[in-house]
Length: 328
Image (tube, rainbow, N blue to C red):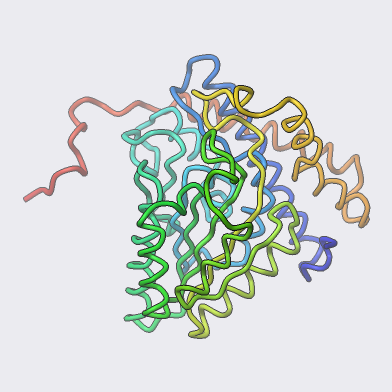
């Protein structure tokens, strides 16, 4: 679909692109910091930025709740987290809004922005999200919950229990499967026996849809419809969003061991960020000079955020148990 099919105006599309590009450039910076030993770990969302931004823009972060997973950096930034916030998390700084430097990098959470933090154990955010949605339903609020995970997580019991509960209660929420083709090193063909994971929604009484997460307009419109259904009492939706994983599973993995050079090369040639830039040019929304200017501006922004994050204080030893045990 064309970008203009989203029915967003030029300024909104420009803002969406800036979010996509900033997330990609920040992700690249996080890899640099890891490789030079300034951070201990990184798990990347490169290849999913267009889908995540399109997804998140269909919601109202001021009242809706987001329960992400570890690749959802772009969506978390749309929800309100800044580049400096993300960097402080990766560097383990005291002011890190996700955990005050106590959690692993890429574990996003921000109470101020309605982003609920999650466990490293995959899929635990799914049943927690049903609890958030149930609370909003009880309060008769028109707020909704969005939660996401990878396709490997669909093999976990938490996934099925959450969908079942949401179907029974007709909860105001959207479940997302970000299918990037691999559960660490296990390909889709060895993960599940269906070609469309969204069909599992029907078994739980949910709405279901598969979207191409590389297509901004298609993804945005699908999530906009799902959000409207949830707000209007039509229950939960399960959306399988097809994306790519341009990098290895994490900074401790090497995908060249289990993916062919041809596969990796073809995937990078069809990078979602580059495809969106081609659309912006083809639809006369931006020209090349404007794209170059945005890149330069974002580079300066990320450099500044990096410097500020590195200069922030580390947690002190006497605060190690703070927020872990209740205080009288």
